[in-house]
Length: 287
Image 1 (cartoon, rainbow, N blue to C red):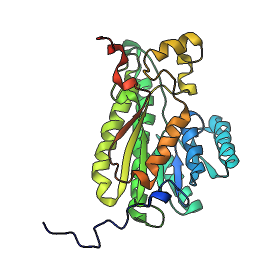
Image 2 (image 1 turned 60 degrees about the vertical axis):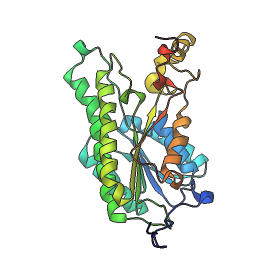
Image 3 (image 1 turned 90 degrees about the vertical axis):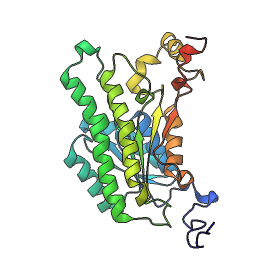
Image 4 (image 1 turned 30 degrees about the horizontal axis):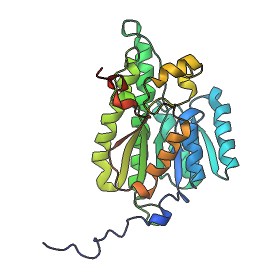
């Protein structure tokens, strides 16, 4: 067997274990980071050393974005606010452009922004369908496309990262588990699955890494009705074999790892963080 030349074996760009989780010198954009999972991702990335763009969709969410920025400052991090509707192409392009103008580059995108507009199928309106698809799927497409354009232009900077750029799409257990009464939401997350994998396949040769995280039941405002009372919480635990609700930082810590060089060989993967919800626990005793 012919040996690879020394210049490519071993790969000189492989990370050193003692520096892999250090995101110093990197810039991250986290969409929908004024609350919930996005807020935890932004704070945890900042704690790891990244400068973080805290995105919020409209003026009414600015207070929450400010709370995220305050939490980042408290842990010694750096952030800037960016109001942008991710379903609006011009807003997305402006957010990336202003980030580069302020900080010179973008290295990490967490495409997290998402909404729900729930209704049973016969009552689901076209406006409800379009609103969810626009933010949850089209919004991720627009952000991923803009990030990839920039990552290709920047190239690999070994002193910063093994990769030219890292994208983490926020999906859901419902890219796999059907969800009656939430057809638009489940369809949007199923779309994120194939969008993420198709993009990952296309851009991997450019050393751009694209993956997804699939949260299960996480304690956030969007699903407060599922955990805010003891009765609701007990019912929810019937779907979670690990018998606890997830906390936003359960996702934030995973995002830091996926953005770090320690996960450099992870491409096109959906990482389920759900306490075992995707194991269909109702079948534990034979269904």
